[in-house]
Image 1 (cartoon, rainbow, N blue to C red):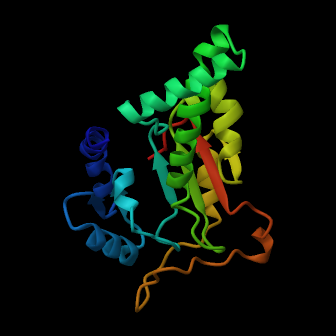
Image 2: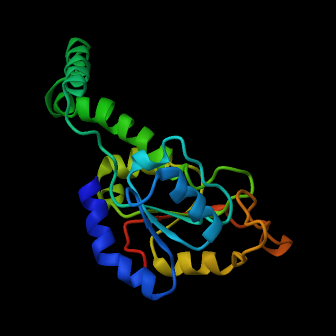
Length: 212
């Protein structure tokens, strides 16, 4: 949400800026201009909602980390309520009852739709065969909730799964630092060396704050 984004900007902008990182925020410039400057900078931080990436693709070394603060469950709406009611009624007719029936709409409608949104969000990171980086999902429910462990995690793109920031730091340590050139790179990420060829192209960090 925009409220969550603005809160993150308020709390973290100075931290990033003080370390020499350029900070972009959705709404402060036109979307395509932000995307262009983000690519050209190569070492910038972007605060945005999921709507920012509609029609925008940032591939290559400039995008190495995607952070998702919480699982993107859909806000209540008449359409969603109708879909849940229909799913529940179908389950009742099929003989589902008790607690299982109570959770049916959540498990069969809300969770699958959320997973689709989440996969689209994490999919912003790996756009080409040479892209590498970290998908950080900070929502603790991805491990604490049964649906998180049994449905969400298995549905994520294939990547090494870690829960400690140190592992992420080690992963970034094997990536070649981005260096500006003329013209600046817009798509190609540095190829992995033969010594690192067997390492995952991506790492998924779950349920932990990113160490700044």
